[in-house]
Amino acid sequence: MRSFSVTETLVIQQEVNRLRLILTNCHVIDCINPDPKTDATVVIQDGRILEIRNDVPGNSSSEDDVVDLGGAFLLPGLWDVHVHPQHPVPAGTTIAQITADFGQNLQQGLTEAGVIGVRSGGANNWIDVAWRKAFEGSGPAGPRVFACGSFLTTTGGHFLTSGHARECDGPYGYAEAIRDQMKHDVDHIKLNLSGGIMGPRWDRHTESFLLPEEMETAFALCKQRNFPVMAHATNPESVKMAIQLGAHSVEHAYIMDEDCITDFVSSGTWYVPTLSISQLSPNLATSEHEKAYAARKQLAEDLVIRADTAAAEHRASFQKALSAGVKMAQGSDISPMKDSALLELGLWVKCGATTWQALIAATKNAAELCGVGPELGTVEPGKLADLIVVGDNPLSDIENLRKLQLVMKEGRIVADHRT
Image (cartoon, rainbow, N blue to C red; front, side, top):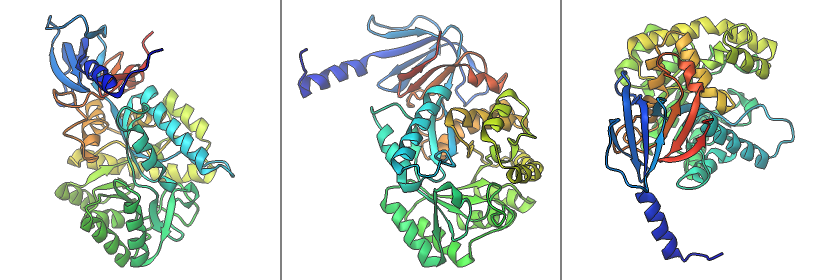
């Protein structure tokens, strides 16, 4: 077989890039206007959306790849902006195996659920950084990864059993850990200001963990170096402190008072509610997919009780934020990723969001939270063609996102589930 020179290979690649992918006979949900564009054609070239037009004959060549979508729905790929490697892991599992499992998990999220972007909420040994680099460009098909390395908490802090925590104490301890994270090329810094629902009896979401001087040092250093802070904050005290100190996003906020909502609105801080943590216990699961997830998860009885006890207040906080117009994006905090975003979207609607609000949270808003709104998150000319095609309208029923037909990353079809 003849091999090609570097120059010949570049010429061939340039010719391929000039070819267009033309997707015809589809409904486009652009995540800008809630009314889908009907009978539409989307033209993609060089990895970007070139044109969106009514489904009428246009200029095309015999070399164009024309795909008739048969009336299916085309929309931006989904995001999950709060993910971790799967946990717990069996004793003795090596870092190499955890890294491989995380990469496979990410790939399945892309190809089986259409999750084209994720933001890490904590991953040990910077394996999220590694997979971000592996999935960049024309490498193996995987979602865009925004990495933080380990999440930072106090000694005896939140979720130590995950293996993704880094314990710090005192202002110097936090400064040293944050600088080390930055040195390892993370995108943002994750700070756990309080406890959580899933943890031992001394790890409670009603309690805050950091001293004022620890928080002030951590946030000041991140601001100085221009690194966004992803703040795990679960009660009114920690939520208000995170917003006051300049958090880019607040995760969870299981309990919020009216001052929390006011601070969210006035500051423009993002809120990622992670409803899956409190709403997916065996006692609260209602749909087929929720029940299947709860059965697989097999939460310990004490954690089921804690989730059930927190559920109503968490729903109320979510609903208050939704009604007030707080900027919100979708993050699940669960795994595997082929299920996480779809379950979280279902919970958004179940807890009071419209299908439009849920979809925007998982596309346009999520991309904006991650700083890539100008390039991703909506279907517009000039944007990167990270797109999915589903069989029925998700605005009629959010579960229609499960009828996945195609997944595209920069205009390249990376998964085809059409029969």
